[in-house]
Image (cartoon, rainbow, N blue to C red; front, side):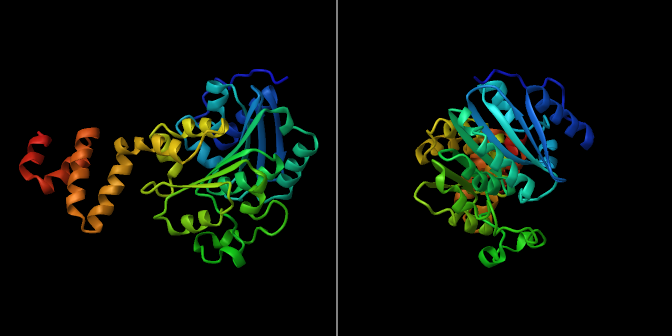
Length: 312
């Protein structure tokens, strides 16, 4: 029986790095468990309800969020889910024998069997890990935002962004993410097709149960943009329930039409490609839906009189 738990009420923002880690570890020790995994990783479990969100996060990126708390804790509070957060110090791609052994133990001890539904989630290197370690819980859902499939040079040598990280071994246990995710119920990969390397990694997730969802104009900060649209949490809830498909995402993604960073990126893309008629329409739409000065200024290029009036 999994007991309900609340997330810590203490403010985690504006803490030093060590104080932040101490607070997160204490929360795990009080409400589930905390395990140190070698020199670069920690695992923190908050026990609540019979659904488990397993998330992989780079600690510095979590600390940079407005509330500086792991993303899974929102779902402990609002949905009664349990949350297992694996944290890395720096970009490790979670490639560490201590992490391998940890997931081996979870499988051997039947921890994932305690939960009715399990969802693995991550962004970038965390998205890689979400897919790779999902093999530990067959039948789980996976949501990976702009994941890498591998950094092994013989497979992904075309990706120049992470050369110094290739010293990590991607050819041993839990290695090639698309293969490791074979036992998942569904692997949902979200990426910006304009980010060439991200799109190429996404294309390697080609199994029949892989759902690739292009998110144009969201760039490498795809998670921040989805949160800015208030659709990341609903997306994860749909995935946990097994209801995330292309049509469901299309309905959620309509929120981009009122999201200033998306509209700004789209406007710049249209102008760079000489599509001034469409750019004019987007600038007008941006003024109407957001009122942001950037769209007023752009509209003034196309409608000088109307733009001047709008700026008054």
